[in-house]
Length: 110
Image (cartoon, rainbow, N blue to C red; front, side, top):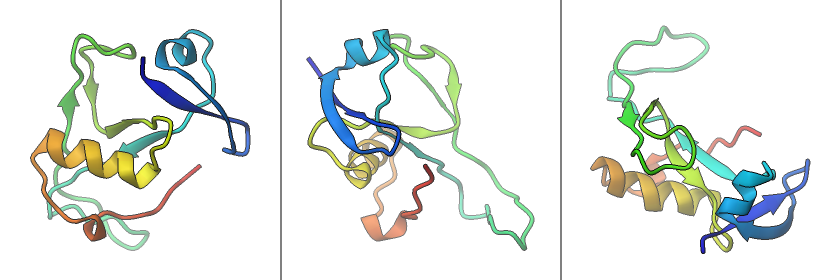
């Protein structure tokens, strides 16, 4: 079974649980979300946004929103895994992007 990190309201790890248990009881957990854009997209307070955002279709076997379009990639952080580790392990392989970790923004919004 896949073990995921369970956290408190301050994002402090308080345990781990099987993914199915986390979903069944709606337990607070860590997850990553990465927005992939083409090189024309510029996002800042001073600039207009233009360009394309990568959108993927979730597989039909997902336990959350199967088959739906998703503008973010990422996933639930497993026990023993970091946020950045999840981003780098899932996204380059899934989306054909082979960039180094230095090319990813490291902003985390909680």
